[in-house]
Structures are given as structure tokens and as C-alpha cells.
Image (cartoon, rainbow, N blue to C red; front, side, top):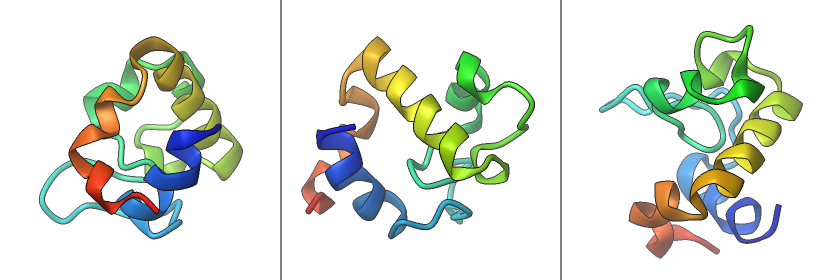
Length: 81
């Protein structure tokens, strides 16, 4: 997935696809908040990112990247590898 996959996953979740942010609804490897997650067609069938398998989370992140670029992940860009 390029820049997001190379940096955001590690910076956002430590590569943990079951991660849960203790201060928000963000979950999964890409730390997607629930409202963002629900708006992605790739997420259908999974109530929260952390409940979806790796392949679904990766597909949802690619979809979000196509739609919005890296903007959703920019607040954590300083953590990217």
C-alpha cells in the first residue's frame, strides 16, 4: 500500500490488527475510528476495524487512501518509520 502501509500501521498500532485506542473508538492496524470504518464499503460485515481480518482491514485502508490520501493518518505521521 505504499506510504500508509509502510509507516502508518507501525506508527498507529504497532502492527496489531486487534489494537484498540484507549482514548477513542479507533481500532485495528490502521486505527480507524468507527464512523470512518462504517463509511467504507470494504468494511461491510464487521462492526469495528479490530473485528475484521487483516485482508479486510488492508482493503479498507486502501479504499480510504484512494478517497482521502494520507490525510486521515497525518496526525500520526511523526511516528511513521
